[in-house]
Amino acid sequence: MAIHSKQKAYLALTATSIIWGTTWVAMKFGIKGIPAFELAAIRQFIAASIFIGFFLIKKEPLPTKAQFKKLFLLGVLAFVMANALSTYSLKYISSGLGALIGALYPLSVVIIEFFFFKNKTINFTTIVGILLGIGGIGFVFYDNAFGAHPTGYLLGLTLAIVAMLSWSLSSILVAKKYVEMNPYFGMGWQMLFSSFIVAIISFSTEKTIPISSISFEAWMAVVYLIAAGSIIAIIAFVYSLKHLNPSIAVLYAYINPIVAMITGTIFLNEKLTATIIIGSLITISGVFLVNYSMRKMRRKLEISIANES
Image 1 (cartoon, rainbow, N blue to C red):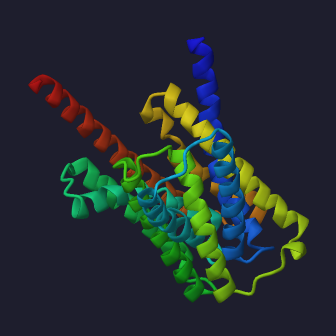
Image 2 (cartoon, rainbow, N blue to C red; image 1 turned 135 degrees about the vertical axis):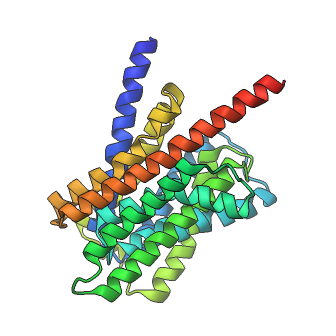
Image 3 (tube, rainbow, N blue to C red; image 1 turned 45 degrees about the horizontal axis):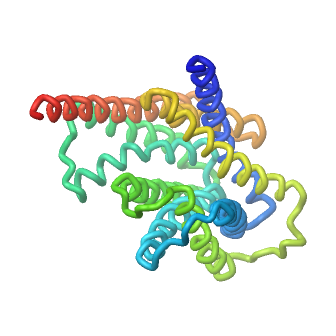
């Protein structure tokens, strides 16, 4: 039974890595037929309805007023600032670069905690990892910065970085148990709040299209983003976390950008140069070093606490 569960866990990890990598390509494909913010609003509203409906059927109690306020803040950070902005950024940058910037979030979590949450557990390996991560992005950026539309490229790059930082901050708050409730039920409410905010942004800033005018191909992208990206991949990721060592379960973060770049090249004809490949490998190496150093320091801290007690 244990072996069978472990095999399924590796399959779940594989599914998570592939699906979350291809969602960047699906978003890029989707915004060809639907304005970016409108796409994000539709995706979030439908996914939120599925999550909330499921837990209401299971008679999960509604959040309290205090919880609703916190869920609203998390929704703004995780789904307005992170998901919607990253979707919009793909108007100007490749899906592979978007995924690569998104993979930087472990680095930014360390930096944010160091400066704003008084977490001083940073060693030499962590610093090297952060520098490699940023340097790799700079390498990729240099290869793309001087194309036909440099202004749009810079805007997309900026939005992707803001989205990644917002996701990092929301992840820190979730890890610190900012809201004490079922995380999936809470995520549903976050997406619901965000969907209305993003819809308002969409109506205010872009030329929206009627739901009836959305093409079949664009709807297929939306369905894939909801069913695969927002439901199947999350279930698979949680399963892999339960049955695999955390150091193995987080391998998806290193695979996602690679999957996004390969599928983006195949399905979207995005260029994949030697410079982009080298820069991506440098960045992924930096993310690995940061995760490795933080896990090592946590183990030392746990051993120290155990010895003292």
